[in-house]
Length: 404
Image 1 (cartoon, helix red, strand yellow):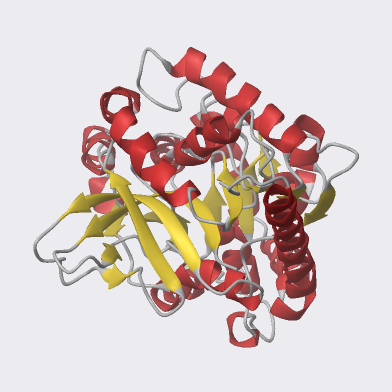
Image 2 (cartoon, rainbow, N blue to C red):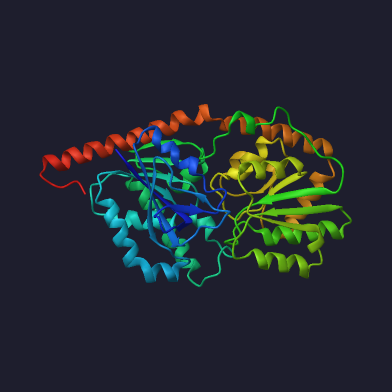
């Protein structure tokens, strides 16, 4: 049996029909995990046509993974203009007798769910984030933000309530806001699996200035709060601390972040690294950093934070979502303003003993995300959805109904 999986990732469709992406954190291997139970992964994704993918792109369609491209869109307005065509392509996909797993909160997941309403077709949900946090004030620049915030939260609540199986990336946090029905199979696992070589043998602390603060995250939206982090670094410089900020990531707001650093007079202390080429490049940056900071407005269970912890790196993060399950309260901050981040960074960077304790604690926590621990839960989730889909197909056949 095949499985239809939704993603909101932005991809490129080449002339030969293959899909490509420049997003190093796309996680093709994440989608290959479904192959432990299913025959083929049919990946529903928005795709922009291109005659020749750039040299920095890597393939999404690989053995076992088939791309299902829908018309490319960016933003709510463009989505609505192309919605009819998008739904038509999704309908073609749903006409297959495949299992359905919706990764949420994603726009395409919500659209597929709306099309499944009123049918008996079972589906699973992987809850990877909280739309209520993602669309909080200051997160995206659109007049529709308050409406989208309410709409997506409502849809995710209903989606979880109607699912035959629900998996969460958090152990407790997301379950509170988006509970499953009593009849559903539920579990929790992260999409992050750490190979042994990603876990350092021991933690380490870089004690000599200049202190290097590292952050990695998309610049396609504002919810990673790179602007607030840049302002916080400006405050550290004003207090006389020898510090550098290295920002990895790309997107439409990259240039505005660069302008902000220039306007604040610290462009010479902020390195814009662009999109790093794969996990090894990200790990190399982490190994040369003093401190990792993640000031997100929302997070499910952030992969990049777990990877930083696995490198034995002291980490700070905002007090939201799955970050609460990774970092101790003293390593978190309320994302109110740059001053809150600056004060936390100042205290940590001036206390080497504290940094050593943080690094050791982080490495121990990250060891819980080894492959052997997570794979058993993941496989059971897939099997439950496959079983429910098989039973649905057989029941529809017995009633003389095409299982679609």
